[in-house]
Length: 472
Image 1 (cartoon, rainbow, N blue to C red):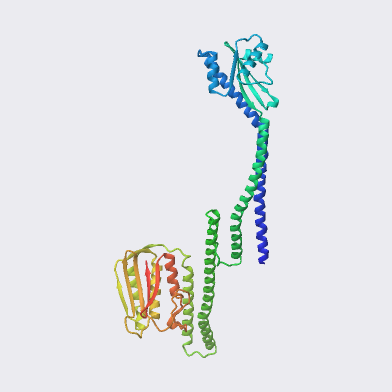
Image 2: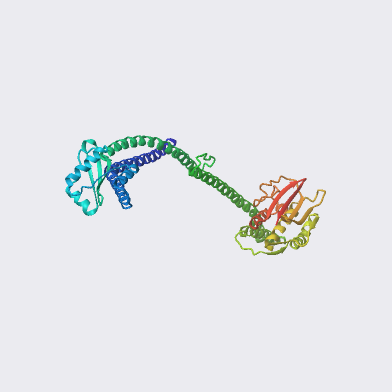
């Protein structure tokens, strides 16, 4: 199984690696083809276009200088000093052949030689009619061209010339260099891509293994990914998810355990009354009733009814809406004490109280009364009547944190598990004699009400006394 998962993960990582490599190769190839196409078909034309625009701009400056009264000689000198061009002119504008020779000779005197240069008759006519004419003279073996603009003015025919390199050869060299550069770049890109993919796939492998363990209900491990990016964020989220699943699973297991214990306890607590009812009913049927059988049946039936009522009450808490109102805690508490004072007296338990008056809260009187009643009943049932000291102590006071209610009593002999004291049917009396310990549902009801209403509740044991505290 382990080898299968390893091979499965490697296969997926290889796919991811190939996608990155193929993607990078396609991008580099597309970039190379596009660059070669642009260099071969556009760069030369764009350069020539920019040079034409440049010379035309110089021609416009020349016209401006001449119109401002600058002599042709000074205008030529100024522009040649400012720009990278040579300018010649001739006042002979009637004979194109003579004009062509004069311009050619002046260019030669300025150091610009032509293998091919001639002012064609059509170019001459265009310059005369339109005021200017552009002509590119390719010099073939010299591997450059000369771009000339002829301008016809009142001062004569001007020729503005600029050297234009052979862009075809230049572009060819650029393309060769580009191929080499992109080839080297591709190798570097593959190496960098490998490092990047490892940076991504290694955490992904850990995440996949982590997910596999979670699917097998193994929640003990955690992801330790520290990449300072989104992968680390995802890993932290997966850790929190695993922890939440673990806590939820533990909660479900605990709920299942409690449910099983609840069913066992319900069956146990119903078994005796049902058995007694059946036995005494059979005795009555056989004519063995001594006058007490019916009372016994009624008493056992009452116990079952009380048990069912408490179970229903426990299940209703959290499902039923309980409206809130202003409650006088001191009055509710006094009422509950008076109702159970006789039960305490029957067990020879004295009740000592310290209750501050006029303690009000917002809540439901029925639920708060249930808390007081169950805790007081619990103290009466569990309170030891054969030990020195006060029997049951009750306090109600207020401070900045709320209203504090505490009730304590002397404990009977026995082992009390405080971690389980809030569980349904847990009783401190190991024999489960209900004459002593009750149903074991009172404290779970108190706990559930406190949780629903947001009250603080705690149980502590010290100096042989058990103390319950509720903060309203």
